[in-house]
Structure formats: C-alpha cells, structure tokens
Image 1 (cartoon, helix red, strand yellow):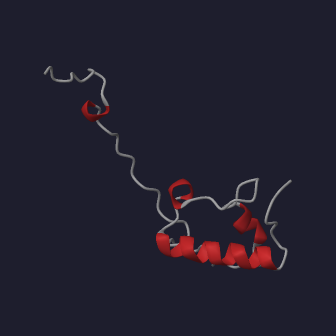
Image 2: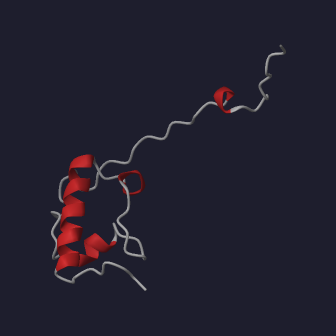
Image 3: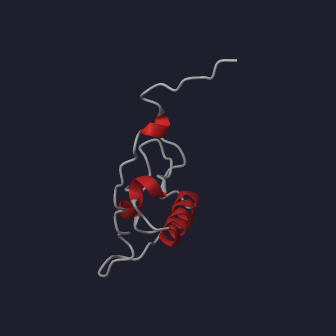
Length: 86
C-alpha cells in the first residue's frame, strides 16, 4: 500500500510568527476604572452591531475582560448601550 505524500507547503512545515501581546490598557497606571456610566469607553469594546469584542482583538487581560463584560451588560440593561444596532 503506497504511503501518502505531504505537499511541500503543508501546515506543519510553516513556522508561526510570534507577535508580542499588547499590554492591558486598564492594568497601566493613570487609566480610568471600568464603569457602566462611562459609555464612551465601553463603546470602544463593542462592535457597531452591538457585539462585545474579544480579548484577542482588544488586548485586555482576562481580569479586566470579565469586568468589561459585566459593565457592558449593566449599561445595556439600563439602556445606556443598545443590545442590537439596526
């Protein structure tokens, strides 16, 4: 039985490039706290369709991402941020 050949450009042969992570903007000094009343800051972490952006895109650490999602949900509940954009 013949063995399967790999293509020269297979995924395993490529090296992945390393990109250093951006520092979390809320972990740095002199940054505002995450607050549901600060709608301008929260809008930076929500898409134009109303979805929350992921940590990978925003560069926020896990601790502050949890806080962000909590505050975005509070702002949505009291109608400072929309659930959906039409």
